[in-house]
Length: 617
Ligand code: HEM
Image (tube, rainbow, N blue to C red; front, side, top):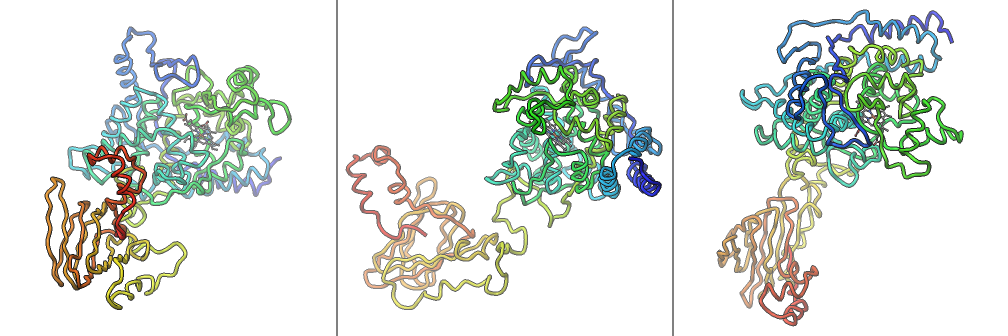
């Protein structure tokens, strides 16, 4: 269809908004044939090394150094260009790219739906610049002392990991995409848990968590509590791209880590999605169609599992036939890797050019132009009117990909970032939000409940003092009984002791206990880690502290009078480990206990029957 004048004008405006603001990057794309990596079987073996051809480098170390030197020459920045890590003070603005003209030409022929999808993509994308104003290059400069360069620390870890296993390049690129696309770049993908993002089906094959853990550990050891996991993902990915041959872009930092990670939020595009639906999905994240095309260039490295493209080999769109858009020799090859009706767990390289499957270059586009795309979305990218022209340009221009990919990664890295203390934290471990007991907001409101004076009031102690206690009893006001305590690091317990009763030896793993004796007398004591017993006879009005985690007890030795104690604990959920019940009611074997107590099994068995009541707090 030919667009009418009004639509052409709209597209013209949209293109101008979308493209003329983009900064050009001076690019030198690494050439796969200079540093040829080979792969004979799939998935690739970590033993495969760079081979430097044409010179006499034979040792791995020499190859590594050669690759390193080569890589240093290919350094791209966010609006700046670096050579050999030295800043060149020049900015380039791209106002008339061939890429832009080609796209316009092709788009004159696109369907109106595609035009609308592209227009939405470009308009939304145009509003979000590729360098986030909330983030900045070098955010951590000087934040860990003048001598410590956070990016260098991460770089060291990534480099080390890369030379052990070059597939971390693909792993990290994908991890950053999957993190940023779901509720923004907040490291939510890193959180462990039974229903966190990493448990959602599209994330089950995401790899590289160990790299981030190692980088975080290295950073924390030199600069504690300053660098976010979200920034570590961004820095590590930039380093991985560099080592993968994709040049160097300047990474923006200043993100904080999110508190929320839910599998149900994972709304990633799937490989059978149409290009226009995918453009719309990227637009919802503030990324335009050209960002999408450049980012999908990430499929120049890494693997796809058969179950994600098997339909293309045997029953494309329920036709009972393979996808006609797949080149016949590739079809034959992939059918060998992914036999019909197999489980689909085998994998193959996304970039089917064996010379370049592990190199971040434009080979992916060349492959899809030659109908050698593995995923449906990749192949459709080469044929869809929205993206066809961009793909062709990228396929034919070996030099421009690295800069464009870097630029798109920076823009991806700015999606939905959290930058204020209220929005996010600096996690201590990338796998968990910081201690739930830390007060990170005024209070933690219940999911659907009302927050008013009643929420902050606990009435469960009104029964106390109604008369002498008949039984030993502990009344608690901890988080379970009094939800307003969540996050406040305090709780109470009231303990009633009829005469002659005891609160048997126990510990509170998460808190010290400060006991106030309201009336009566009480024998109390605790044992330290050197087995010293510290005990006391308390009178009404006395306070006694049981240090955190140490075994302690209370006993009302008075044969006439009851006692009542009130204990304050420094945790909303101090926890109790009661020694008698822990030993005798948890299924620890009779033999283990008999040997431990230097007695016989019969004695242990009889002990199990006579557990004293009221052995917990
Ligand atoms: C329409 C959007 C996208 C779709 C539908 C898609 C789909 C897929 C699929 C199905 C796989 C194979 C996963 C597996 O077999 O375990 C994959 C792998 C990969 N994707 Fe994408 N992807 C998209 C966008 C992106 C983007 C934007 C990037 C980079 C920024 C990216 C980077 C990667 C990488 C590097 C791998 C290989 C991972 C590895 O080897 O571990 N993808 N993608």
